[in-house]
Length: 76
Image 1 (cartoon, helix red, strand yellow):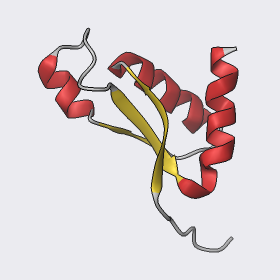
Image 2: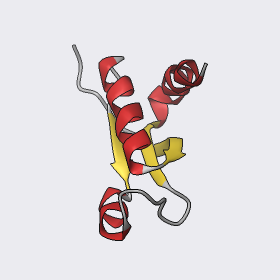
Image 3: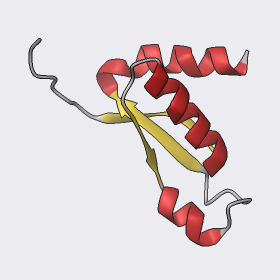
């Protein structure tokens, strides 16, 4: 298998820290590498409140369509 190249990161979910952790876990189990942005800021503020605009789940641009499908199925 060849080396994986990474392009830009894109947002596929925005919400509270616990929701973002759940979505990241769903994506990881579906084979999509994901990261949480603004996790530290959320932990400093309050675990029960959203930071300005929420915590973001980011994936590589190349996996955006599949990742959004996984997230949409979670909401269904």
